Picture 1 (cartoon, rainbow, N blue to C red):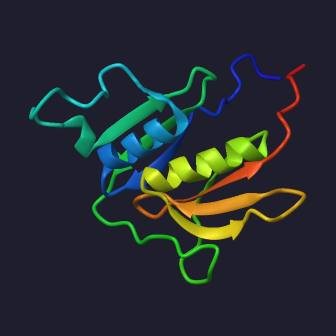
Picture 2: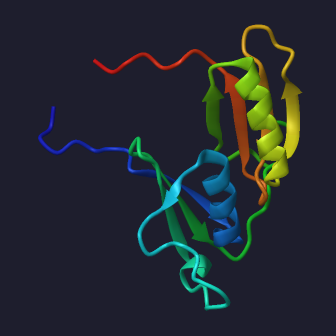
Length: 146
């Protein structure tokens, strides 16, 4: 194994509204902005919000948001425009699953697929406010790292 291995640093989502999408995921996942990326106070110009923003997770993973001029929304799970990328978000209980479903919708997610009645793996598929698909499902907690 190399002394300096490649590590997954972050997942980057293109968006036509970097600040808006960052706020959606900040609220949904309880993440915090990288120092300097917070929204500016009051009516100050949001220069960073028109370019690149990063949200950090205490667990180490990051989500970044890159401003683009145009972004055709995915039509997945239907045909047309492929998903391009999606996030899998898991909870361990049915109660948390329903709570997070309600939160996602309240924050602006759009439900694309309801497989909540699946006994093996209840699942909802959503589009975030700019059309990126993501899933919330019930799964056992991940095994501890060795």
